[in-house]
Image (cartoon, rainbow, N blue to C red):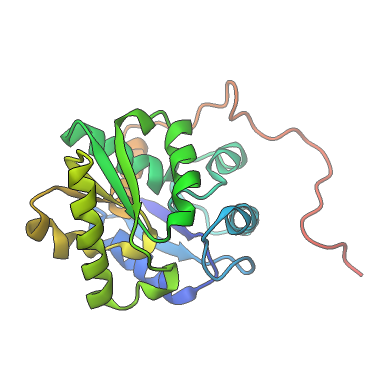
Length: 238
């Protein structure tokens, strides 16, 4: 089984970390290829970045020629998953949706611990679109930007502080609200006394399950193949 894992930004080092987390979660016989968009934001932290990222990720997926069995979209709360499901004939699993669904299976209420507070609105919208916002006790920012997550000690401290606020809000499960936090669940799970769901790992396992069950995106309605028409990707060639 071959999974594509798409980063939502152009920072290649983050793609490598995400892909490493995906490989750690994958079962025997599953290979993982990490994709970095050739253009777009270096980090996605707001509506503008998110829409730009969505177009870049879709452009990257449409040009990929290697083939795959499923795609994991590794951008928490970012746009584009519906477009990817139209574009592709294989399962597309978004880490936001995957993490929330698994969290709902192991606790009545979950909280998302994310980066900057400015991303809370789009994460809430993404959870609403996926039908899992009602179980979300809170979306809480750590105050760290995406590119600041490379400092493990600082990230852990900020996460634990945010997690205490999540527990006060009634959360029984925590969700890592950024693909750049992949791997953090191992460091904080015991310290917090709550289950911690990593979206990348959750999406990988759900993608593997869909492929193993022979299931893929329904093309009967909203995710039907795009209508044939001329589409201009990027500036016209000179």
